[in-house]
Amino acid sequence: MLNLNMMLIVSLVMIFCGGWGFVSYHKHLLNSLLSLEFMMLGIFWLLGINMSMVGSEIYVCLFFLTLAVCEGALGLSLLVFIVRSHGNDYFKSFNLLEC
Image (tube, rainbow, N blue to C red; front, side):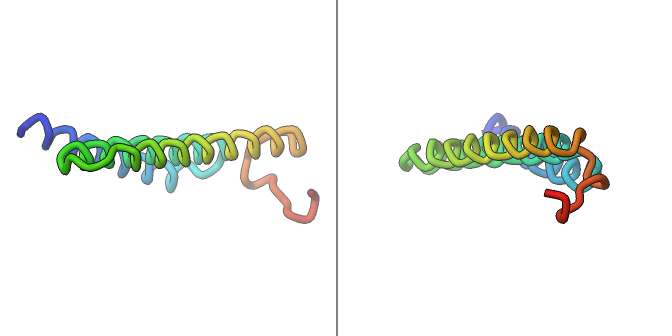
């Protein structure tokens, strides 16, 4: 039981650290995307722990992981597009009228 509680605490710390990183490191798009992916990993771990405790279907975790991978691929493609069009990933240099 101690190991399970420790895993729950670690997953919650991962989610909060990802949220803190997303709020505090907002100058670069890459830092924001990495923080979001770290939060998704923590949520996936928490979901996996909860599904294993309940004993229900694990397919929900696989569906969530598929959505997280699609979100990461979309974020990476947007990052590549923005770096090619603007030259960097600073948020202060973005202008919506230039696209």
